Length: 311
Image 1 (cartoon, rainbow, N blue to C red):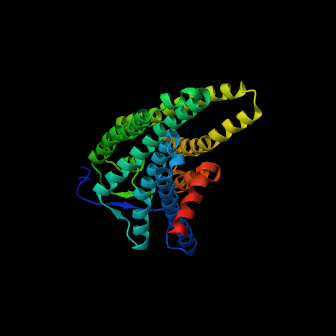
Image 2 (tube, rainbow, N blue to C red):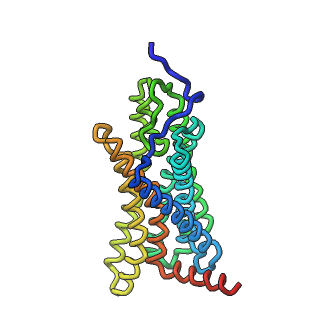
Image 3 (cartoon, rainbow, N blue to C red):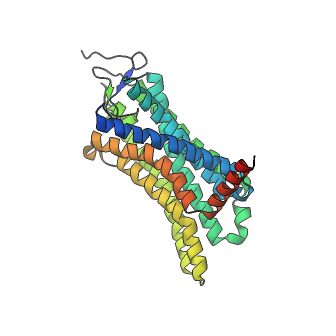
């Protein structure tokens, strides 16, 4: 008989992203500085949006939710990775592992639907500008944001619970720097074929449904922009959408590589690199993309600095 152990009784081992060579110590320092920059950038974006009256619009409200999701994402993964590295420990409890799986999937799924809501906001602003405040009311924005969080959470709670319900035997070493469902399921000493298929279908739908809405929204936006007679209006419309499209490209590109590839094409090393890009770099790039290319955000930041200097 095969010895198995209850997943609630023993810790898992995260093999991590770095070892203690000089090169990896430098890389770890860069990752930690990126983590701090992500916290500061997203927290500052949320602060500016909720304190500057010029940013009290549906677009920026949804952007504040995106920053909150990114801030929570890096806080879910990087502190535990950093603590294990600095303390030369690799263990994570089943509860901590389940929490990482649930939060990672919830925030990833929620961000998919939030980006679709932001695409709809841009569609209304460009294609129906006279009815914008009616079609994008504060109540609708709140419902879109709440729906994004809810859609990300319900399915992910079931996946996290199911993942930890499998018996785990022999090696409990997860070849990753955080608990991710596909990496953990590989260690189960049970037939996980049906669950892996279910997880693959769910992740694919959670990616493709919002992406389809984004594609439809931007197809309608492109058609409307091409009908504009003013070159200035076209330039302004493209500038308004370019930041969001850059964020969508970064986000979906990484997630599709992780979750939509067939199992036979997945390699552990490649998945770790792509996961690092999504969980470490994307959250710090999002506030940079929206601030560097946005005059209103830069103006709000200057106003905030002037108020701080005046105090």
